[in-house]
Image 1 (cartoon, helix red, strand yellow):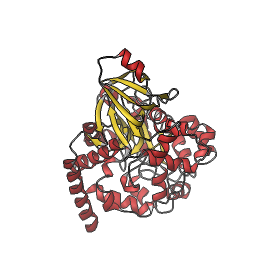
Image 2 (tube, one colour; image 1 turned 90 degrees about the vertical axis):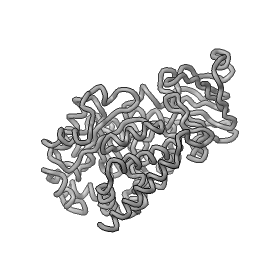
Image 3 (tube, one colour; image 1 turned 120 degrees about the horizontal axis):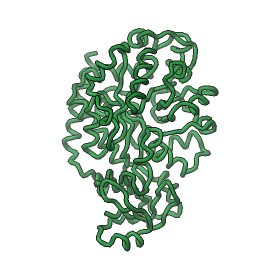
Image 4 (cartoon, helix red, strand yellow; image 1 turned 60 degrees about the horizontal axis):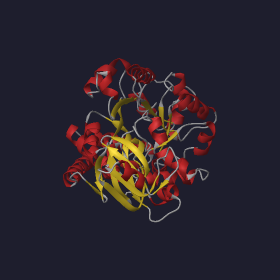
Length: 433
């Protein structure tokens, strides 16, 4: 199959007018001008997209697909209260409910042009449901609220793959996360980080997301003090910031640090030196009243930045184009090409997938989107300005058509109905609680 448009933006290379990408599932085999691709591959069918820019599938580096169906029930609240509502809603769900919620989130993601995620998972439901609609990436099995000695038992309960090869083979990678400093004690954070390192899989943590987290680490007081007493076994306030705390625990090296709103100075330098990168979620931070990440300062220090929408419970949608425009509003020095790289190649690199996805180059997985921009002489700017769920016309992942003419190729009614059932169940649980 040849996928063509008015422009092709490979990310690693200059835009190609009347460009095309040649796909032989699951990989990209060639990229270039359409006329040249027709000559080289005369037997392949061509899908032309007039008025569209062809680009790599997007990388949403921080999601919570499992919260999709419960978002309306949770509603909006100050961050500490919001976390409590999330926990209450999630306790009411069983494995089938989680699968339904993840499937709906995956469907919303693929329709928005996202083909790779960094998702927080509670078991095998997330990667399985996501793969069914063509969404892959790193699924971080989340551990919190237990003692370090219980880690292996907990991983078994969550069905985390015991075979190292199955954790990171193919398009789906199983990573680990210790959630956050207020919900995981120091020994547990060390143990999860060490286990991830030993198994060669990515490790992530929510870090420096809120003032409540900063206050807890500084003095042991504030809205998270009772939560930490209950969940973060062995915690004692270290008298430092969250990034410095992870560093002192030996758990910052290679870590994917999520949010990083409350960072400055030396902590930003630490992120640049030690972490795999920082995943920023500006719209979620705004909704939860947590402030704005210091984007310009991070870039100045050399922190590798990726972008995430977080969950539907803390955002209006799972549209990474809208998230990129929110990021641009925080740092007007960001050029369109830099933003597109953050949404694709940089996101892939932070997740450890830089050789697999994020650019339209031969040998990578054939994750390709066509976005309707209308006529333009500046395809990257047009893509950033006009891209949205409504303008994504075609999505291909691993060489398979997932969205055609703006419509998913999988049946959607069952997914949406199952999600609505879970939403009602969560609403009832929150009313009771």
